[in-house]
Image (cartoon, rainbow, N blue to C red; front, top):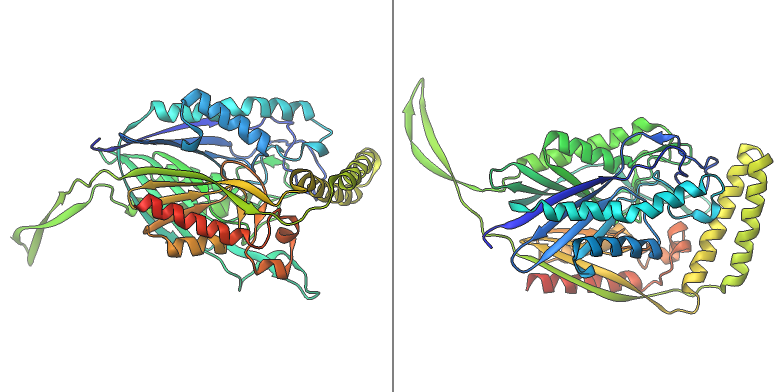
Length: 462
């Protein structure tokens, strides 16, 4: 096949007003009032004579294993693609419908279940549409810089590590961009890759939002054209420089800043390279050199996919019975306070019930296990490599993989093909903090991900 083929698809997945929203431990409301911007499932299909793959970008916080399976099943059935050729990624916005802490919901439970039931086919429809829209394309990649993110692991005076702004901490501010044009150089799709927790909108916010990634896509599509996908990076240790707010203007501003940088990078890319040729001289007020910029058709990029399950070591977990009883008791007290308590009492009780529920869920899933199988997936597009995994890897993991990658452009992501759970680096286990307390993984897991990711990259390059 002379050219790579690409197609895009999109489904609106905006929740209806009244659907349970968010899921913050400090949140006192349950139902969302409405949407500030639409939420989408956006898909990019890529194909050549040997491979076909679908990359699906969803404005959502993420899904547990059960719902991930249902979504992947729906995509597989509708597109007829094998599972190993489907990448289902979430932007990880923290202000969508509450799709992951259903046990704490007492208002609008029927609405969130109805929303979830309809979601797999709506997401699958975007992937199917992308495959139906395949057209010959050329592609190019580049990068820029944007400083809307910061290391969020801050050590305070009492020695605890909390979520804040650690301006001296490790951070990657690279904006990675891939642009796909049709053969007339009209943009078909742009991928924007950046690492920053979408926690701009927090517990005070009562509106569904795609957070800053949704604004990035909006700006890129306005400035560049075509359809934009946002692929979240390794952001377990990173957050926005301004966040945890109810002010809707904040996520729009941060998204616009990042979107304009991504658009600048995209507009500077040439998917059809040109060779400078001297055409002669012209006498005017001075002598002017005339040039012809002659198009040089690039080779079609190699499309290759490697997907494998990797066993990651787990830390020890307590037996679930006691933790589940504790969580149930705290949920009951929370429901009593929702009926008769003051807002601050509800907030504190919600936090306690949320934390207890998280402990119980981890124990139920991982007690007695030593390892957890997780999918690592690599996609090669010429000299570009996309590597993804479930969960929330620390940014240092992505930086090491990118630095040691055999590809000039390496986009490493979490939040893909299911699963929650932070993946801290080894040194974080001695420091402690929220990510270490809540991770299912042991200290060796990050190194295993780096090792296996580099093996996948070498296979893709071979």
